[in-house]
Length: 215
Image (cartoon, rainbow, N blue to C red; front, side):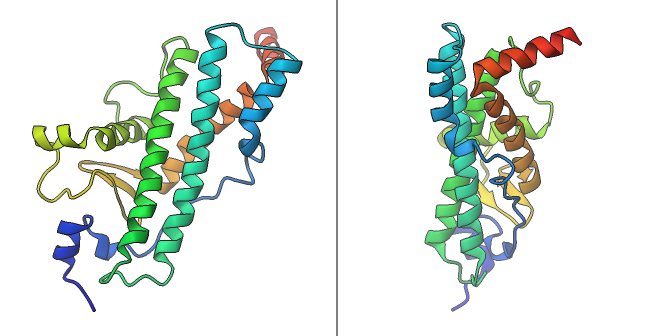
């Protein structure tokens, strides 16, 4: 059976009948410690050196959100590729599609929280400026739209053609008038993960900062 693309767009997601491929980078080999960030952070704080209060709480929150984002990204990657493998675009596997969408929503939400925590750690200087159009700002706004879909509908930001607050295309993630490519999503996660790698060990990070100040 083949459905009319307009029906699929209206009741599942925009342009779902055109979603046929995706190139999503795998970052697991680049960050082998990602599964252990939280455990490493505990052991390093308990046995080597610890962050002072206030920093201790925010750093732990950042590491947790980074870990969650890393897991959600690769879960989303796996679910997206699973959906596409053997899928008939005009008779889509709806359950698998929304499984993938949910994982991407989780990635956006966890990453947006990590970005908010980074602003505190970076003394108020965030990863993006308000409405600067950067990939970080766009992903952060997508996360807000996922959280506040009803408000977007009420304000008119969500139009009649916008069935869900986040949908998938061959190029990347879309939400109303925003988009983030899969490559951009992976680049954002790389930045988040690099900092999590650093913050998992306060002792090594302190030495890194001292070395940087000396130069």
